[in-house]
Amino acid sequence: MSDFDDQQKQWLQGFVSGIEARKAADKLAGRTVGAPAAAQLNQGGGPDTLQHVAQDRAIAEGGKLVVEEKAKRERHPLDRWDEVVGRAEAGQFPKGVDVLLTKYHGLFYVAPAQNSYMCRLRIPNGILNAWQMKGLADAADSFGGGYADVTTRANLQIREIPAQHGVDLLLAVQDLGLTARGSGADNIRNITGSPTAGIDPQELYDTRPLCRAMHHYILNHREMYGLPRKFNIAFDGGGRVPVLEDTNDIGFVATEVTGGEGFESGIHFRLQLGGITGHLDFAFETGVLLKPEECVTVAGAVVRAFAVHGDRTNRQKARLKYVIDRMGREAFLKEVEKEYGKALRRAAGAEVTSRVPADKHGHIGVHDQKQPGLNYLGLVLPVGRLTSEQMRGIAQISERFGSGTLRLTVWQNLLISDVADRDVGICIAAINALGLGIEASAIRRGLVACTGNAGCKFAASNTKGHALKLADYLEMRVAIDTPVNIHLTGCHHSCAQHYVGDIGLLAAKIDRGEESVEGYHVYIGGGAASTKEQAMARDYAQSVAFDDLPPLLERLLAAYLAHRRATTESFFEFCGRHEVAQLRKLADEAPVRALAA
Image (cartoon, rainbow, N blue to C red; front, side):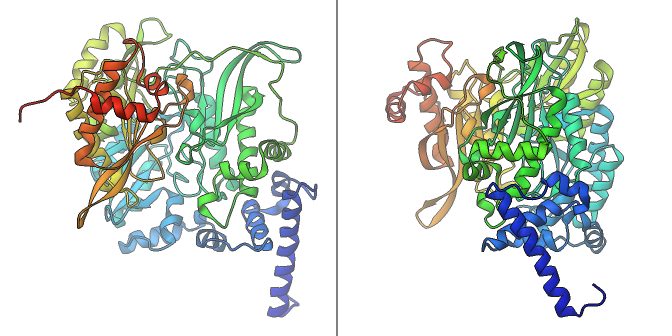
């Protein structure tokens, strides 16, 4: 182009972009033109081709790229490391769209909730070593607030990081053999798998190798960072502790094929797509069966199809669910097959076993491993928070009495594995000495809360603080003897997945006279598939100020205890056989325990 003047160069660039956009539009319409995205990459299209093709298609169709897409196109966020370092040296936080772009490196500026960074990690399958936990405790002390939060993606977050220490924290994480790369923004989040992988007596498949392979596939394929919005992937190996795989964009569910013409007996994975419970959808069964060694490559094909066809003009409709809704399930699967390079194996005619139900409280207490004489201990972490002292203590316990392996769960708790029978008692005593435990009430053991407005600008209420107050109140007044999960989430992003809790609480600002107070919308009867309780929670009460919430839930739980068919009937089952209006009436009539002031 050196022989052209500036106007000619500009025209030629637009002309070439138009050709690429028309190719993308033809592909979207079902016309076979050119090669699939993977082939374009292999033919020298560049690692950002998928993103650019999708953006060009949106423009060619008369759409307008959102600000975030324009910024990502101007220069890919992963190429902005020098900017991140420069701001750290100047002691400055990002502004405007740079807040989003900095999340690609794992740093989240969370003002106005906190005038600081939060760093979220990538820990495949949620499993890390004791020495890594110790190192993270040191990093939290040196560069953060001296604590870490376990997330609902079996991950860790470090908070209260000053501007000048953002890069210091990232480098400390990398020195531990971990990374924060792509842990937020428009990327694939931490890969979750069965927390009891490799030690579970009932599991069908050890998910650790698959999670590790998927983790490194993402890190080493630049196109995995060219998405229109966030993306979640989970592997369920059939173990005791559920992974909530049906709430993910891609869910892989281990199943045993026992026969069927054309099917090889052995462990396969069912492919589920499109889960996003914050938008009231579970992942659907595609009818596709995959061998374990096919899963990672197929996941990559799904992500590339999403990158090509995802919405770049409306971030509210940019998740995989909306691509599938727009295109249709079979049409989207055909796009996946194009990216994969061959047809996907359909499950029709296969003889498969049913999943052994998971135990949604199997992450608490002492449990036998499949290795004779060994146990895993499930610790109760108060709404997922660990001080640096507790982090070091847990690491030390796991080294002294276990294998030095720590396992995070999507329930914001933690497992210490490989503890010998003779050492269980001393482990429990040491855990108690840290101010933690392996047992809790039926209320507290199923308590899940997002960060809330103490650390997230989107949250409308102090979810973690309210969760603890709510547990204190209910434990004193309601003798619940069966598991009840209460999920508190601070905003519509639903990080605590309120729609799959027995009781889901969505934070809201409530007008009370001249002032606005913190409160919640209340939903009941939710559950996820691996526990055989798959349902979206139903609307029970709207705009309840937090002061009024504890007695409202007390009456609801009292009604459950008074009217359940048997002590074995779960809260989920009880809600399922009543209309919401009936439940409200039963709660209004329920006897409650009066306590002296």
